[in-house]
Image 1: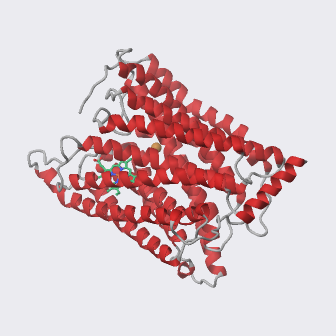
Image 2: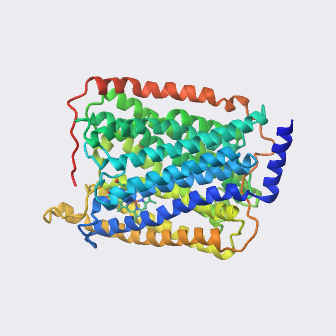
Image 3: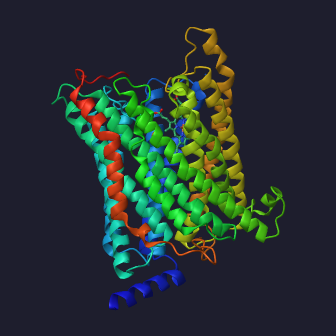
Length: 559
Ligand code: HEM
Ligand SMILES: [Cu+2]
């Protein structure tokens, strides 16, 4: 009883006073690291773009592959993980009545472990001893310290996942029979995926370390690649689920509407968690040694993920139309004008959603066996993930930052900053459109990914790529301007904007919404089904890959 009174007091205090300083500083620290990674990673991206267009020769002490390793690592490991954790910890604090002291402690231990891991991984990259790209495929071998850094990063992520589980479990104990607030439900899904998805890569890294040190002579290359993608593919959907949480919950509130069916939202989350992990082989369609049946099974699972995405698209456009029509919008398309296009908190995630239409379509192309033969390892793929993670996910994160940072720092988004945000969003959109279209196109013409500038002795085909690569460089330059504006906005909103209260926008459900069935809260069941589906996707191929393994490979330093 006492606990319940205390809890509801906390929840009210949180609503009235906003986030507590102890909770705010956790999220602020995570976000600062995320945006520092964006600044550095973006700068390296620009260097690559200029190099690919033949405009810049990189010096011998800072090679293309070093730059590319750091770019991939900073943006897809550091930026995304730190942002997602900062955002979800703020959401847990806001919707569950403040973080428990032990959860805060876990978040800080996680932070420290990840920073240590980050330093251990980056130093060998800077010394050109780990130019293995962010996928670190054996038989390329980096300095062992690089892999030890990765282990620390995973441990740090686990601390944050445990913290989230403890926080949610505590709330459920005090609120028996109630539904976990929707953002905390999203956080649960994301941390379940983060925890289970990072187990395979941990096994891979523990296999690599003794081999990189020299204690073990050879490594099973196929096994390593398979374990990597069981994680890598999951990571993709972790970003996606994080962005989707803002689409379902935050965007409707920003436009003055209500969110779509609570049941559907929870089902989408459950489906993404269950069907995600056994899709990893779609990154290995070209790899030898995996039977067609297995590839087919994984492609089926990858395409099945498209189903919840289509449900999301339907839900979002239904919310937009309903809200716009309530505001007097008319017609089949002209109600679009009633949406608040001048509000960066809407504009950025909206463009992110639109970018997901070509992004998702490109994904379906790549999952198709015959088409994958055409685009595999070309610049097409790079165009694809700059649309998906570089636009759909990242623009959503930018949109979130324009209200989350003021909420955390107890400041306000002024009309001037909003305008800067709108400009920044438009610059990013134009820059990415130029760069991504050029990358897709030049990929179809055969330009390889992960290759520094070369004309292959003035080969005619290779020279034909140059005009497209020039567009890539122009797009990349615009993107760098976008990065600088975005980082400026975050720093300004965190430390210099006028003081005041900012809202954490969470939309209510429809007025006469049907009651959400309680089975949606049974996470134990979801996890068991997820593990069964993972077993279906991986047990037989792993037995084959281990049992029929060809001779393993010694380590190579190819750079
Ligand atoms: C200033 C903005 C950016 C520019 C100019 C840029 C440019 C590039 C270029 C030219 C490549 C190398 C292509 C190759 O040789 O294979 C690349 C790779 C990559 N980029 Fe970006 N990018 C930017 C932002 C981002 C963002 C925001 C993300 C993700 C959040 C991202 C993720 C990646 C990844 C994962 C790779 C692949 C690395 C690899 O193949 O190992 N980039 N980028
Ligand atoms: Cu994938």
